[in-house]
Image 1 (cartoon, rainbow, N blue to C red):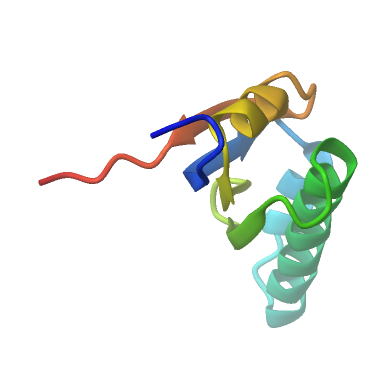
Image 2 (image 1 turned 180 degrees about the horizontal axis):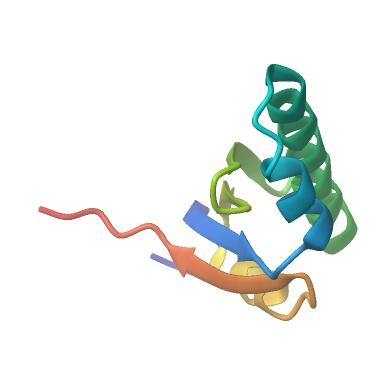
Length: 95
């Protein structure tokens, strides 16, 4: 695909002590707090890194502190350079 076409990428974040603290809570309230924290953190990273409207965040992955987002290859490279990001990988469909 060309650099201008969006594809699904998975973005995994660096270690975050607040995420680990919230995730260790085993209550319903604790689960809600970590969901809200992770969604906000991922949304803020995207808003601060990429042009508004140039991406579609599909979901946040609470269990691994990551998210799925439809972006271009160039945008993936921008996210790779963000200090909060550990890995950016394009989704690989298996035949």
